[in-house]
Image (cartoon, rainbow, N blue to C red; front, side, top):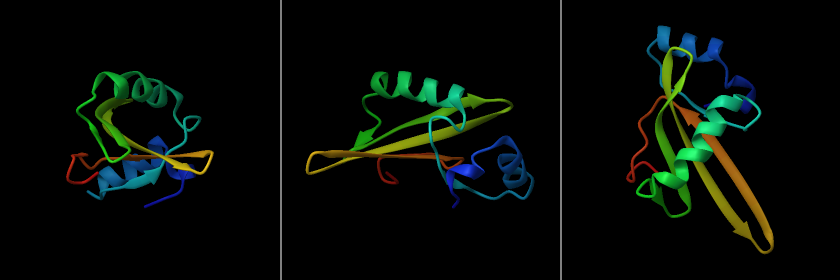
Length: 95
């Protein structure tokens, strides 16, 4: 697990080389191309939703595929949004 500062090709490559799984906090500005594709596809893939979590698997990034999940929570009148990037396949059970 890691903070959004670790959402980078260098960290992904280290994890791949060591055969590690990762779950990293993700902010849209970290990797704009992945964020743009995620936001486009999450609405089209409506079956990938459970209890406020939406996800998209297999988003192309450089020479790999990554998966992104998003949780939107409404607390009183404040919306809180959390996103993660991972190399774990996201399913309804894992969401």
